[in-house]
Amino acid sequence: MVNKRVELGKNTMQGRKKPTPYNPPVVEPTEVIKRRWLSEGAFEVELSRPQHFQFKAGHTIQLIYQDEKRYYSLASAPGDPTLVLCVNFIEKGYFSPLLASAEIGFRLEFTGPHGYFTFSPSPRPPVFIATDTGIAPFVSMARSGIRDFTLLHGARLAEELYYQDLLQECTHKYLPIVWEIPDGEQVSSDLFHGKMVNLLAQHLKPGRYDFYLCGWQKMIKDVTHLIDDRFPGSHVYTEVFY
Image (cartoon, rainbow, N blue to C red; front, side):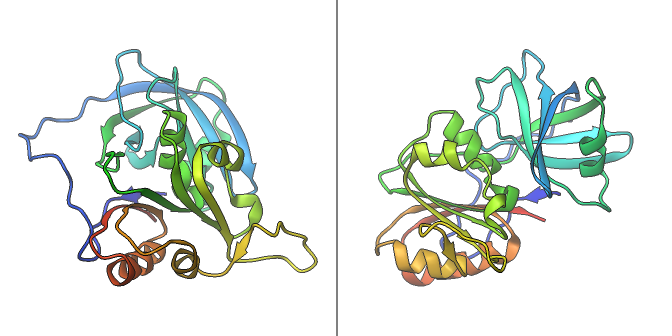
């Protein structure tokens, strides 16, 4: 899994930092401390954190092992003693099987922090929209104390709506949505079934917002076009997970 910032739609914001002279990233050591499975297809891995390493909620790190490198969003708060990643397991991938089977104490390296997908308060209400493990940066934001945002949280199945308890406590409005409901399965009446754009159109009043979108590329494209059409004057920040 790789996350990457993209710019889509007329309201989408450019990075807020001015260009700076290039300096090679500092390579930091880390090791696996703990792992727990969130579902059959994703797990959380906890890594040791160098004492001097600083980041903001929404930042990513680039893991390095041998000649392979992958970006992951941090799900831990900036004040936490360890680094937490929410990893989508890809059977034929490289890093997710490595992290899924690594023994406690397994050593690797990383660089960071990277990215611009950080929260910036404004007079506009914040709306967070996530699919799958794209929820990770919003978990970091919630754990860092950000509150009263609207969250549209999407996944293929209800069991893949990770960190629901934490997020529900922090949101002004929590709107979960799934694409599939297995035959015979009973689901909550608060759980929506369908497309993210329909959920957004039905439950968000006209106005100007700060939208933060993280997850599948198609979702981000579809939602950004809807924002351009239905919520002009809004600001949009994106992070794509492949």
